[in-house]
Image 1 (cartoon, helix red, strand yellow):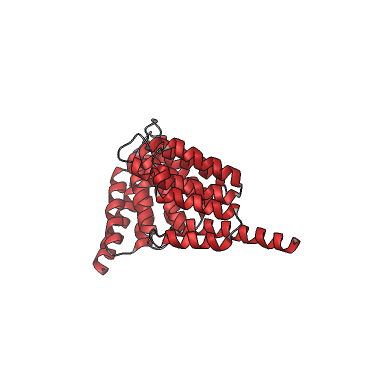
Image 2 (image 1 turned 45 degrees about the vertical axis):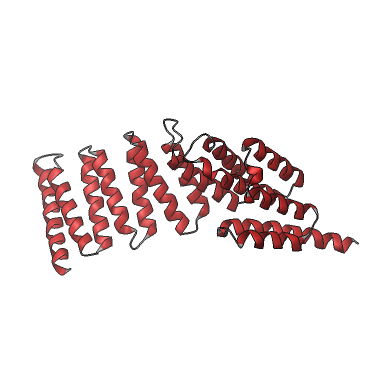
Amino acid sequence: MADHIATGQLLANKAEKKLFCCCALFGSNYQDAAELFLKSAKSFKLAKSWEKAGSIFIKSAKCHIKLDNKFDAAKAYVDASHCFNKTSRKGAITCLNQAVTIFTEIGQHIMAARYCKEIGELYELDQDIENARSYFERAAELFDFRGDSTTSVIQCKQKVAQFSAQLQQYQKAIKIYEDIAQQSLNNNLLKYGVRGYLLNSGLCELCRGDIVAITNALERYQDLDLTFSKTREYKFLADLAASIDNEDVANFTRVVKEFESITRLESWKSTLLTRVKDALEAKVMEEDDLT
């Protein structure tokens, strides 16, 4: 460990001297310094000196920028990010943003999309849903730059829809889920996920609290996918809608428990259902107070 740190520091010192000499005598020749900084950063990385490794990777990146080697600069920022992520998500996000900017500038849209998605994942870990959604949305746009409907685009759009639902922006989530379902129907690899997308869309409709809209949505889903009415997801949504229409909180709770006894719901979906149940209970209590 100590040997790696000593080697890393020695290489960093050589790089700094090379920079000084380059600036004094040879103008903008930063190539040797960039390579020395890269080797130094790798030594600090082997020593698990994450902050130091990250800061040296940044120095390497800046040398590559001076050389107009933007691709190598972006890669160095990514390396720096992965080091900083061991100690600070904020530092990791800052470096990844630098990489995304450079990859976008040089037309490397898939690379930019990949690291936009990674930023979104870091924000998700911090439970910063607003920023997470923003970066997944940008990632979807970059993945879809040439208009290809890829699995990566679908994955990012699903996240955008999920976060929109969590932020109570239900109409946006509904549109995304229905669009994804429509796109997936004609794709043999994706069509099996359609009922899940329609379930998610239906849960968002339930949160909106308009029973007519819920009924219309279920009809729309059946028109979209002729097999949907035979699924557990359809029956689940239909039973929940009936419970809401009948103002039957107990039945609503029973329907959710029965569904979860077979299919465990993700926590964000449980949150949506809790919102629906709370609204239903409040409505029933209000009407009881009036009678």
